[in-house]
Image 1 (cartoon, rainbow, N blue to C red):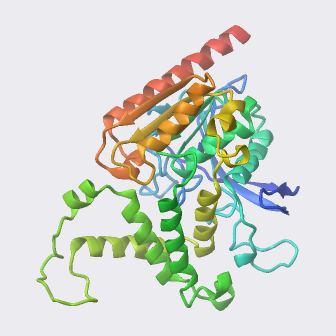
Image 2: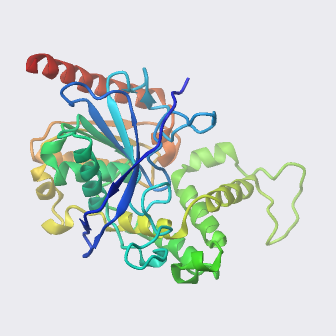
Image 3: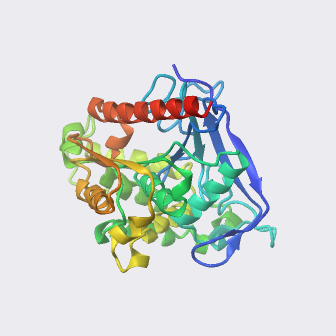
Length: 382
């Protein structure tokens, strides 16, 4: 049974300097919290979200029984990240379309919708914005930062930008940067959006339209990369849509997989913002902490002080286990405390959202250790 979640928002007047130059001011961050902050404020866990997720990490909204948070199987009372023991915080990233200031909001200087004029934001910018919100909540140090996929990149970045403000980094199904294939997939998806006639250079709001066709294609491309070949074959194979036979048509929807992808694209285009999609995929492309160190990841991670858990999945070809092992190797070369689990799961990249018992056991065990560590420290402090 899920608990009731309550969305909140925090306003920031002061400018936030951005990696790409310039700054953003007068912005809001949407967030949710679950559980109770303990007396010494040492049991806080920040959860960072991936591309199309948000601050609504767990629980349901009152009166909306089908509104479960995107990681509700992982976070909550008695779950691997147990909200009876941890104070969990989910924050919607700047530029997103789920409550935090983004391209569909008004620019404070012009009074007009940002649209394509919203500044490019990076993983590092999101981390710095999150740190400001935690300052307001009075949380000086996090028990852990947890994230999967793009959220895992944020967890890794946290350990480099604010190494003293966290004790553990939990990086799931992620990578130290995108390879060329991943950047290519992102670019094809972006081109589908920007070449949609309804995009209007990113200022489609003023025209009262949405580049839905481009968003549908972008989502279809992305969705293919989240699933493994085994899962797609098992779930769909070469099955035709129910009640039809081959039409020998180049335009009709005939196979089940076609129907499924079109459904996913249609659903996505009804709620996600096109400019947000461009911004977030660009942030993925730009993330590369080793770049400032001549490509040397070991040197980039030398400032880290956290203990780490990294988890990968064997059939995840978008963020393959080899990419997690790169991080593990560089951490070990820095004599950091790191645990690594490579889960043999058939689900592809989406495995990090699912209920594989081995994966859940690893996460539960690790967070049990963090909870015991936190309780011991609290007793010693008292």
